[in-house]
Image (cartoon, rainbow, N blue to C red; front, top):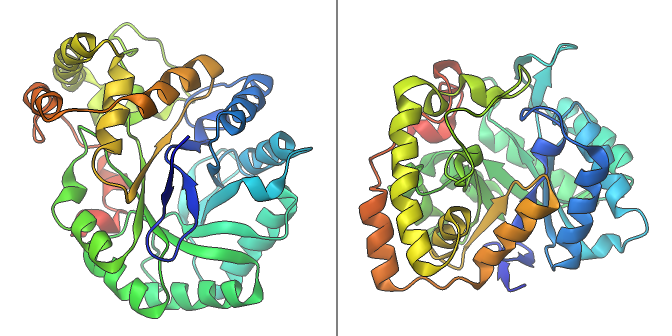
Length: 332
């Protein structure tokens, strides 16, 4: 597995990271034994960056990762944790808390659940309207000094907010949705990150499975799968978006790779500062995704991909209206 460095101050990690969210939450039921086996397979393949959140399954995801790392060398994993989101007993989202005492409390519980004395990259999942980003960065900088976290990350913030945050303390990486059908970061956020020396961890590189090549209109989802309500997965939007996938499939087949592999390879091709997070929940999907690391796209390939999936061709927003309103990145 090739490696990439997250910005000018961040850690060196595998060129592909593994996102663990779906192993605990939001995509419907997952098999815990298979999840752990998938994490083991990822580690064995050279993946070092493991991305979780304290609110994924209300702590379950962190405990799952702890179990998967048991008996392994903790220092071989770069653990990235998102925090700040609040949920009730039914799993509903009820806001964000980024006050200093709350951040310290979140981290204390995370360290206990993970069974470690530090988090490698710690980041607020979203900004809170009542706490300036400078205050959040100040609290996190204190935790870096104390040795409880090694690096500070951000998630879904605008170029302007990234500048403000970075002026307080170096930001190792910005986690943001970036894929063939989520190209908005290219306008201001990615150039600003490069200018500041901030790495990018790209999530949603397969748009939650939509452009994986495995999604069909007949696919059955459960009430616990939040994709059921996402605009890109519903009605006429889904039909239009799957037509884009069919066009991409023709390009992939011409190269002798799968749709998922060419979509991940495209994100890898966007620059050495970008590390795609793959959300595989099963070993077979992990194996497919790992194949993208060996795909080198030519200029002709990139032109064919662009023709198949133009940057403005996607139908529907990536989240519902209420969730989109929470994204500082959408205010850029």
